[in-house]
Image 1 (cartoon, rainbow, N blue to C red):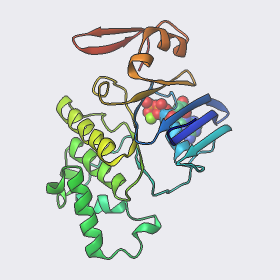
Image 2 (cartoon, protein in one colour; image 1 turned 135 degrees about the horizontal axis):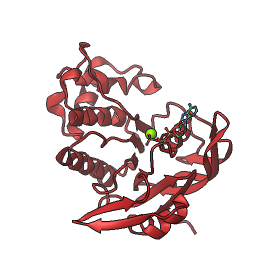
Image 3 (tube, rainbow, N blue to C red; image 1 turned 90 degrees about the horizontal axis):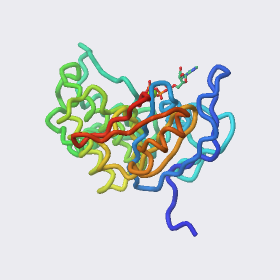
Image 4 (tube, rainbow, N blue to C red; image 1 turned 30 degrees about the horizontal axis):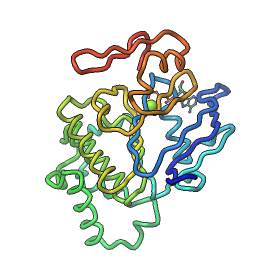
Length: 257
Ligand SMILES: Nc1ncnc2c1ncn2[C@@H]1O[C@H](COP(=O)(O)OP(=O)(O)OP(=O)(O)O)[C@@H](O)[C@H]1O
Ligand SMILES: [Mg+2]
């Protein structure tokens, strides 16, 4: 008997783009409140999988469920931060404007008075430890501060799931640790289910519950200790991969991660 409700499930899912199979027969289940790292080399299909979960892309075959239903575009239950988001802008936009965009484009924002809207923005900026940034011009924020702002934007509809596409890229170690701690708090304290795409398992290893590793069109899911091993990754990549632990870090040798 199931003693949990899956937040997300994929059953034998295959996805094609331009006549090419990107994901093949992918199956996994994410429990409510889990923190999942999604790993895999460039072009493996990580972002493509998120597009499927967001209802932006239909799989060729298989079944996907998100919070018990089919994936839906613009679902306010699912917060999303896209890959490669860096604002180098002179536009007169403040952090609070960008965060507030999270309320637009879905029905929830309609009818929100500006006082209520501002209060909601302040609350969510506070939750990501960034209330001091509210009125800062966005072009002036550092990469780490922009990530806090985008996470606030994704959180503003009180989603039950967060899909974060490489939120740690271009951050130094201390900002990476800050963002990981922030997300861990959101997951543990609010029960938000998180899937986070990364190219480095190291800052996440002791925080996440499980790993979804995508390579060679296929995916495996399990604890970091189970999945990030030479044996499992060699089988997934279809070639010899070694996992080396040194100086408290994990290195994957023989394959791109
Ligand atoms: N709209 C599209 N049309 C055709 N092919 C696409 C499209 N979007 C993605 N692809 C292809 O699908 C494959 C998977 O892309 P995807 O962006 O999902 O990879 P990824 O795992 O997120 O990689 P990265 O780590 O570089 O972000 C790539 O080969 C890419 O070229
Ligand atoms: Mg990607």
